[in-house]
Image (cartoon, rainbow, N blue to C red; front, side, top):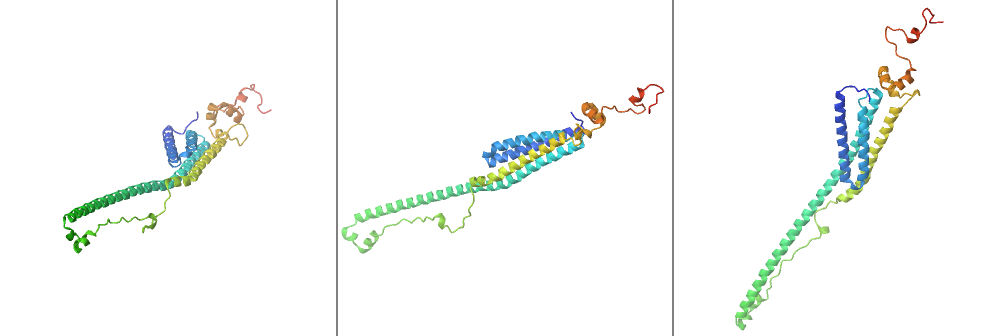
Length: 278
């Protein structure tokens, strides 16, 4: 539709658009990862961002200097909004990942403590079984002795001895000597991050709406009130006449451009010998 600066600029501007689109996808995935409840708003933001970025990318190489400058400014502001979102998500995602790792480590530690307790309980049970077997063996041996020998002080003292199990000491988490650090759960971090993520989305939406209004005003702006957009007045007259003949007629009043070495058309239409300046 419009004349562009150079042929190679087409390739690079679409590379730019692919980069911005990838940036938008990363932000959308990050929002879904952090706050799944905001995915409809995030999807709408990403779609609108990709759409306006496409429009700005198309106009980044038009020959009209003012329109090209506005397109670059709008594209840069879209990237700034995405960068703000990425900064917010990076800070929150770090805390979220740390909370996930802490929860997994706590689960592993609890499983390890449970295995230690089960092993200790098994060891105590085996010890009690051995002691019971020893008592039964001593009882049988005492039963085989004469009655007088059973009442001997030495044997009587031995028979009164009963093995006792080693008590298991259970410590409560509150009485632990080690200081514990209170950490937020991933759900609590998500709840706190909800407003930050929403603020980042609204910031990007503000950039999208603001840049769109700014660009459209530059696209249809007519400061001179002559019916021709301002950016079209920057075009070469021949380019304007070839592409927008109606705007050329409004701007130049229907006058044709004089070719060098030729007389104006109104002078050729006069009769020979007539005074051109009556």
